[in-house]
Amino acid sequence: MMTALTRSAADRLRTDFRGQLILPGDEPYDAARAVWNGAIDRRPALIAVVGGTGDVVAAVRFARERGLAVSIRGGGHSAAGWAVADDALMIDVSALNEILVDPAAGTAVAGSGLCWRELDTATQAYGLATTGGVDGTTGIAGLTLGGGLGWLDRLAGLTCDNLLGAEVVTADGQILEVSADDHPDLFWALRGGGGNFGVVTSFTYRLHSVTEVYGGLLGYPADRAAEVLQAYREISTDAPDRLALYAGLVSAPPAPFVPEHLHGQRVVGLIPVYFGAAEEAARALAPLLAAIPPVLDLTKPMSYQEVQRLVDGFNPPAMHHYYTSEWLYDLDGQTIGELVATAADAPSPSSAIIVKRMGGAAGRVPADATAFWYRDVAYHLDIHAQWAPGRPPGPHIAWARAARQAARRDWAGGGYVNFIAADEGPDRVRAAYGGNYARLARVKAAYDPDNFFRLNNNIRPAVLAGNGRKWEQRDRG
Ligand SMILES: Cc1cc2nc3c(=O)[nH]c(=O)nc-3n(C[C@H](O)[C@H](O)[C@H](O)COP(=O)(O)OP(=O)(O)OC[C@H]3O[C@@H](n4cnc5c(N)ncnc54)[C@H](O)[C@@H]3O)c2cc1C
Image (tube, rainbow, N blue to C red; front, side):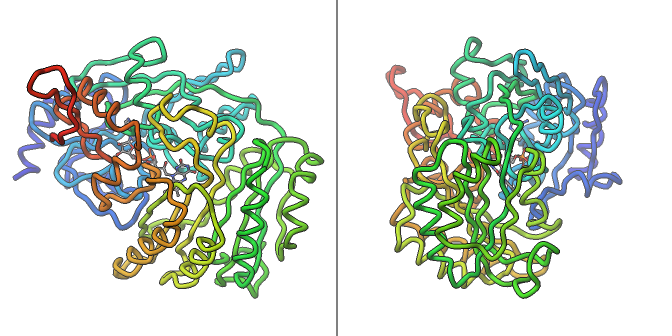
């Protein structure tokens, strides 16, 4: 019934629509509704693969008129599956993939359907880059709007700190050019506030010169995990901004570069990435290598694009995933011990606990300068449960929750909005925005008072109290 109704209605949307409209039963439907997380199996009423900003306006108006909920698909990487919802209209921006690099100005205008690999390729042709996600297939849209962590954030700030402007289609179908000068309240909210405020069709980024890079994987056996994490903590505490440092409690992949006896074994991996000359990098990494010699050292000079491929392959297609996250003020000895013990208990060899050193340029931005709140934290803890299709999810989700709890002594108060799970509830969304939530709720009330864009880590619009003068945080919508 829904299909027949929507098919005839869809014909009206088809007039002047440049992109593609896909309905249940159409040949491309199953591929178009699939997202990165194989555990997500949802059936939208209609998929609008937009061909331009005009299509976004038409799709938003169409959904409003028919009372359809809207999900927005950028790169489809949200592990929570926010890009797709049952019976909703999915606005898929993946065909908005133009890139205009202006090397003289040091900027790039990028269609919101791009993934990081595509944007990096275009900017690196000029020896430039902006902070992007560590997996090349992640969409630039969701990542930028949630904040954006990556190898470059200690040197160049978060992705959202490098956002200079955006074109946005709002809930009432208006097209807004948003920047520090135009709609500054919305510009503030877009830098961390996720997909709550409209459909972004393009982003303008500040670019940085990124030419000499040195980095790679260091591997250690699991029985030295606590010592390695302790050394990682010590070295990362005073690390220069040019040094990015990730640590992972993972299983060694059966890759040719991994010694055979370690295949499938739980190991500790560190990935240092130094932005600068090889000699400087060697000096910066020497204390780490001296503290505990790795059994595997793949560090070397590499291009930024090679760096951006370092963790490709850790997530084979079609696997099922559950992510959760926490910002940490420290990584004390007891937390390290509990995380190591929890990692050893993972019910799936593919599950991982990843710690990323924060700070540097990203940490020097005031917490209220953008919607992204957790500036003064020391680490991001990313817990990634991953299991094969067909297995019951329960044990893996329970393990991820336990791993988050294992770090409770060092919690800063919330998680990263791009990694929290959909079942964690509205309190976790509020906590993810810390002291910025109330202001975000007011911006939401100004641009999306009916909470039209609600299929996301949702910021509820603030409402004016009875006297019409005071904003309240009462939930609405
Ligand atoms: C393997 C993997 C690696 C990752 N690595 C990193 C990392 O290094 N750093 C990091 O910060 N994060 C990382 N993430 C998290 C990532 O930032 C989020 O999953 C993000 O949502 C991905 O963006 P997307 O466009 O691919 O998502 P989608 O699933 O397409 O969308 C997610 C949400 O973003 C919003 N959205 C998407 N497109 C638009 C748009 N055009 N306009 C408005 N709203 C939109 C919508 O609300 C949507 O619900 C990683 C995720 C995965 C799975």
